[in-house]
Amino acid sequence: MSGDVVAAAEHGLAPRPADDDIPDSSAVSKAGNKSEDNKGVTATPSADLLIRLNDDPALGFCVYAARPYRRGERLFEERTALEATHDAHKEGVRNVYERYCQQSVERRRALHGSFPHLAWANGVDAQEAADARTLVGSLLTATSKGLKIDNRLTAADHMRMRPDWGRPAEETTGHVSGIVSSPKPAIRAKAALYGLFKKPLPPQDVLSAEDEAEKKARAETLEWFSRYAFRLKPEASFNKPGGNYQAAVYLLTDLINHRCSGFQNCRVSADVGTIAVLALRDIAAGEEVTINYSKDVKDFQCKGECCVKK
Image: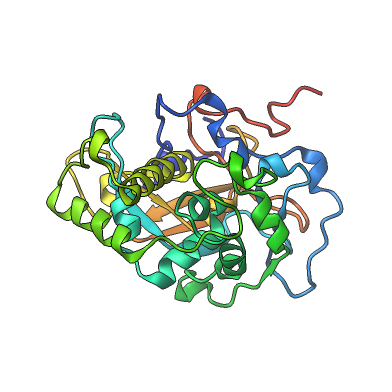
């Protein structure tokens, strides 16, 4: 890389998990949007950042600078929303579901607000999850408490990002959009115990309906984490294993879209329990905030102006 472009891996982050079981298009929902979408974005005068649904909903949520930022300026810093072990090999330890189940009700609700897929995966009511979209800035650190976010996401925007959006209930894979209550405490408790005592799931032929629901939630939660998590270097994780197996998600940083090397305007810097987003160059008001995911081209399809043919 050249100039001021700094890879995320040099600041406590390694490339996002690259899983052979996730298709190439798995990160499209966060893989950036076309440059034309940057035009005409007007935020509340006193705001620092603006969040909205991309003009192309298939590209998910996006973050814009609501005011100018200078090169080197820190846009914000926030605390880790969820960290888990995520071995690069499918056969290794991947305990995100157990870690998710062990979180407080408040933390899970905040996660649902930033990640509609996670809410859907765990049977959370669509409206309940959409109401939590206002918590996207709830983990900002003390140094960023004054940050003003113009959150333009509507409940309809949030629901549109659920995998079952627009599908009849009978066509969903065990999830009924809008009417399913939160996972039963017994399921969450059982999942936590599996994680603590490393018990295997019961054999397929003896799974109860409750076990089937847990199995589905576990698989979908893992898929979500594989898609959105940043892989951490050992020195930037709570759990400092011998290998590079920890990964984490963040409520606000994860909403920032990707641009290929040389096209992004920000970089991330991770430490134990926190991540900061800093400007690589001057950023104009109304410009989309972007970072480089440091993923191999095979991991997802970039939809930014850096890759889309004119």
